[in-house]
Length: 345
Image (cartoon, rainbow, N blue to C red; front, side):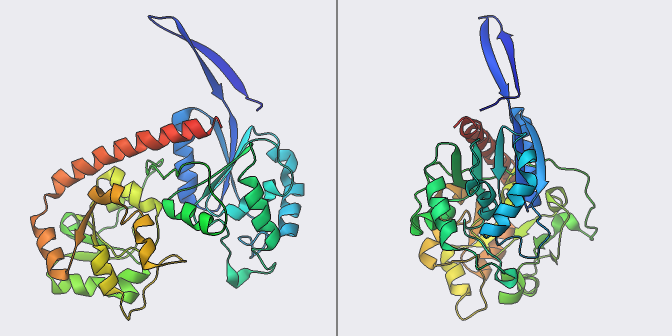
């Protein structure tokens, strides 16, 4: 690997020489959450990072067939070769640009949304195609390519497609680079629970109406980043995906989620217009961050609507906030170390 900077530091009192290697890294993605996360990680680790929002000028940019990957490679290959290492995130098909076209430098593929994700509404190249699956399987065994998911389900999904991921899961730290934010201005905000604009909170169940029946103050809508969200009393949410960046951002800010227990979730979604990022099966629910045994202390689970009312009433949210921040610090340290290790693969 062509490292761009090497410098030495003499560490007293033992006069140990530490060698720091700074790499020029390019991150390619669609997703601002990925961009913020990788920016934070590389700032912590001291590498030089550039970002490129993937866009080939087509509506079907998520569906990367052979010709699309070849065209994008030919257009940008001189630029790509300026870097020591490239990271693709969010949708893994971006990596086809490199694995199809003989990229020999290190490549990290961080899967955030099924490795064969496609947008059928704009699919003009019959993606995913057989060649892509073969390329990805081969890439998983190449020494210069490191593939891993941001949650356990991504590895399970790959395994079911015949791809046994060699590297550990690396979850988002949630410690993004926060900028200025516009507050959501509502009365009595610090005594109000937030409900997001998501399908299960609004279409499957009118969660705002349900909370009002329980005499729980709530606000339903969008928010302007985790700092804005931290000004609410907490979040009541019905999960819809295996993971998301907002979850870990909230843990870092000490924001408490109240979510249905898995048993109550199964009850709630019966005969309802339930959504979960596909493919979904009840038996896989513990592969999600919301119901993973390792994360159980992050959430307050409610087993019924009356149980939610009671738990919201009796929970010491200030104490929970401090506990969540402690969990967040350990979580950050763990995954920054994993990133540090993986960058040396």
